[in-house]
Amino acid sequence: MMTKIREILQLILAFLLVALIFQLVFLSVNVKGKSMEPTYIEGERSIMVRKSKINKVDRYNVVVIKREIKETNTSRIVKRVFGMPNETIEIKDKKIYINGKEIEDKVDTSNIKIDDMAPLLLGDDEYFVLGDNRENSSDSRDPRIGVIKDREIEAVHGFIYWPINKVGTMK
Image (spheres, helix red, strand yellow):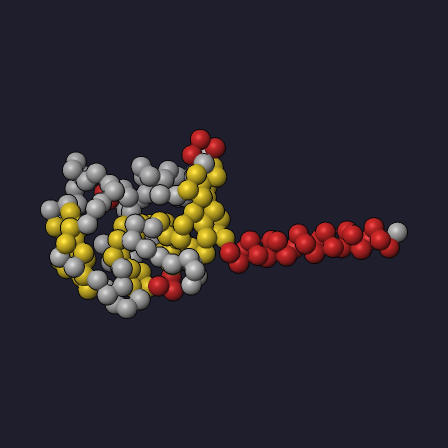
C-alpha cells in the first residue's frame, strides 16, 4: 500500500515538475486580431520559446511582446522584428531601410498604403516591429506602441499547433 502511495506521489511530483519547466521555457499564444495576416490568422494557436541568452531575437523573427495597451485592452502583441538595437530604420516608398540599405520585406507591399517614416535611431535595447498586415497593424509606427524595449520581448520562435492544417514552425 505504501509503495502505491509513493508511486502516485512521485507521478504527481513529476507532472508538477514538467508543468513548471514548461511554464518557464514556453509561452502559449493565441493570435488575436488581423495585424499579422496573411501570415497568422486570428484564432491560430502556437507555443513559443521564452527569450533567453540561448534564444535570442533576430531580424524577421516573430515575437511576443508584453505591453499593456489600454485602447485595445491587450497585454500581449505578436509582431515581426525589423529594426535591431543601434540601427537606423526608415520607411520610404513602401520599402524598409536599415542604416540606409534596403532590406527584404517578406510582405508584398505593392498594393497597400504604407506611409513614409523618417529615419529613427534605435537605442542599445530597442527593437522596431511591424505587423505583416501593414495597413491594419498597431506596431512601432504607432505612437501608442513605439519602439520595443528588450525586456518587453517575452518569447521568440514558435510552433503552430492549431489549426491542424497549419501545424509547423512559425516563419
